[in-house]
Length: 300
Ligand code: R5P
Image (cartoon, rainbow, N blue to C red; front, side, top):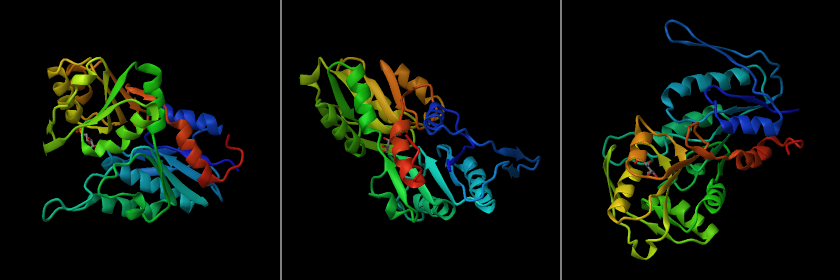
């Protein structure tokens, strides 16, 4: 039996490509908001013993969470055999410890919540830093899909003489692997974050790479301050205009425009969060992992 695909909020190319490859339409859901802002949900499909997959990126998560839980519960209530979640972007991964007395460790509370409602979870390059693996905080089976090969291929096809730059130590895990994949040099910088919108980035030692095209690579672009401050350092050194590559295109407020204004030649992201900068498709790598959970032999 083919799996049933559901979404509440996705409208980008990633889900479209996955549903095409699975040759499965997205099952419609009736979602209604009452005047008092409570949610009504109805599914007109036979769910008995069905494998159900909810596909939604969890950027801007707070308003998404309750409808998501209601959908998972409704599917189960109506007879679904399993309800899995493909969340190409997994939020609440950064507050993974008590940095100051009195703080909540929201990554733990969020993972407990999702673990209660889903049979399994697939996501793309979550922000793993102090927490080394999702198994440390999720009690359900989880799979991490990596965007590294797709990013490497994009750079190989589009950029001559790339120099990869990671703006902080956390980006090292992606940047070094990509550089190694395509056999190009890389530099990892240091970042100090003072507040949500204030970061300081160390100056890169770029003298011997003056003829290269700098490619900044990071997992998340949110306020874009990390990228902007790195671009400013490069501008001071008169490098070629850099290309910025992010896996997850959050772009809070007008971050996208501000990053362009900083003097970049292109902004490229993977399609985990729908955005005009999406140029790297991850449908194939996600589908490979989906196959394991669905055990559906007809998946190409
Ligand atoms: C944090 O360590 C992440 O890897 C990113 O560098 C960070 O989330 C980027 O945030 P922003 O775009 O707000 O500077």
